[in-house]
Length: 474
Ligand code: SF4
Image (cartoon, rainbow, N blue to C red; front, top):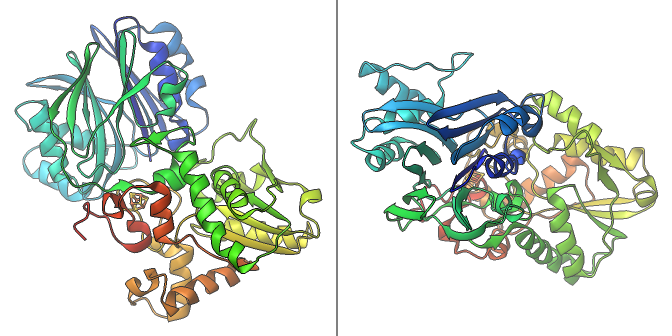
């Protein structure tokens, strides 16, 4: 994932821009970028690999001024990039993933185009987007050309003299929300960025909608499409608890989801001493579980946040494991001799979890450890966002379990996605045994969808059941 924020103001906009962009820091760790228009573009990009956005950009915040600006926290490429075209000079920042990057790059090169690229030889997806937009006769035409050609997803902002062009992904995979306050307009992925800055939500852009933000307001330039496939994982895991997507709050969804998860355990009379969340995103699911099932909520783990503040840390997996292990602190008094049920946003690879569970039994004396992930088992890789926690689909705990059960690489995945099938039950039990849990029950797809509150056809659920590629077409 990545995050974008833009603001247009009658006064200087840099304070709103600086903090508005910073409120997207949980969505990426590779690059941060700001661009402020004050006659010309004043653009800065920094690596965030070893330092946080606010400290990297504090000089920019103190020394730059202007009335229009755009910022990005990126988990992959350096952004925003500046383009000077026949219809104007603009900078571009986007959220998403271009899964057909290589073939589009070859198309551009075969038409005598060229790329600056990135270090390591990769091509910068934001650069490709700028090149594709430049093929249009104006901004709206160019954005549509880019969005038609891109496989994957892209929601973007373009900062230009006349304002900030906003274009939501054609299936609405990620949100863009417009906000307003006296004398200023802003656009954001996370509405959290509005809360302490005085912006009120004015509008959620529809899928494929294009518009322009000026200090006078938002003007729609292209109507939305009727097919939606917004990412369900925004509510389950990615999103910040205080954010709303399409008016649906993240914390509220997680509480409801936990409540739904608790129903079967309550009916079956499961007895545990404590219900807990794996911090941070498991916490809200656990609160909902405890409230819904009538269980006691507690914190057998706390997170050391003063120096390990973010959940997405380095891109390197071994370093991420180390950070995850150092960050989570067990509280023996809450664990020893106890039957504990954990809620977790999801089980991705399961390796870190297995180590934590072993530690709970061996070093801290847990009696039973039950796990309730807030979504079904992940069996597909995300093709639409840079879901950076798993590099290969075969790393997923679900796929590893299936591979062990099948003993071959070719099999029917659909049957494993069917929650009522025997193979699905075998896969879940295989994951349970591998991680070392007393019991494991995943959230049902229908309950996850109900907790979000949108029709399933409007959601992307691809990573669980392979559905939602193109907004209800499957
Ligand atoms: S595949 Fe999963 S993570 Fe990717 S957009 Fe769809 S729901 Fe979100």
